[in-house]
Amino acid sequence: MDADALADARRPEWERLDELSRRRRLSGAEVDELIVRYRAASADLAELKTSVGTSPQGDYLSTILATARLRFTGAGDNVIAQATRFFTRQLPAALYRIRWTTGVIAVLFVLIGALTAAWIASDPSRIAALGAPEVLQQYAEEDFVEYYEPMASFAGMVWFNNAWIAMQCVLFGVTGLWPIWMLVQNAVGLGVAAAVMAAYGHLDTMVLHILPHGLLELTAIFVAAAAGLHVFWAWAVPGPRSRGHALASEGRALATVAMGLIFVLLLSGLVEGFITGSALPWPVKIGIGALALAVFLVYMLVIGRRAARQGESGDLVEYEAGTPTLTAG
Image (cartoon, rainbow, N blue to C red):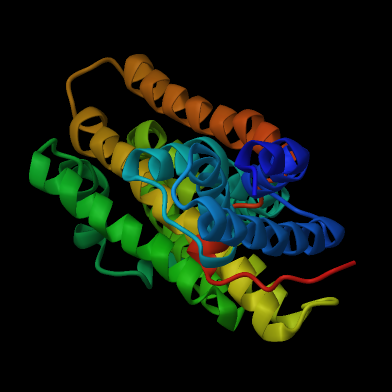
């Protein structure tokens, strides 16, 4: 057999196999075509090796078949490629998908906190029920501010605590109750603190100490809660997918959010640990917090929108998620 003649005759088919093997997504018809061409090319390679042994044509075809084989068996990318895909496509797309839920949660959180503060502040007996006057006064005049003394250990503690809250919201979101309970608990706690600070004339102090880090920190918690509720919704209303498939797919995609928020909360923890309690002017401190939030929102809404339009959902690529099921149609 003439290896050159076979290669000339089969080259368009081999090139088509190579093209299909390198595509990120395949339709059902293309999956079928990939399988058919893979089998045909394997037969061609067997014929080449049987007839002429090792040859440049056989080596070329072996390379194409190896690439095609990865579509069935999978292969992990290197760490740099994985990290690049995670931060430029998967994470922003996952954040973008839950933007509206995040916005609704933010509005409800502020509303619950404001109503709680207004309800307690409207009646002195409710303030008195919170504790002894001297204890509340010390909290308003000293303890609240001292909490934000800048130090590295405090920044680490804040980061760990907030990251753990965010992880819980996502991972336990399937219950449908845990994220809501955590949000209500924190909103009410913030409202109670605001009522006490207002009663002793230090509400402005509270606002100034919360804004630098709180803009980004609270937004990250809202995002985590939104991700958790989306996981619950995928389980409760799976649509045409099986409940297990819907939960697995949504859980993987939104676990991406939990991992990404670790870095977001690290930034807010650094701001809280080193900026909020620092000697910088308040406009500068609040400006730093607003800038951090603006960067995050651009990442979520602008870069996320671009990634979503490219077909990203935040889920793992098929071979990271597990062996794909090849279907036609």
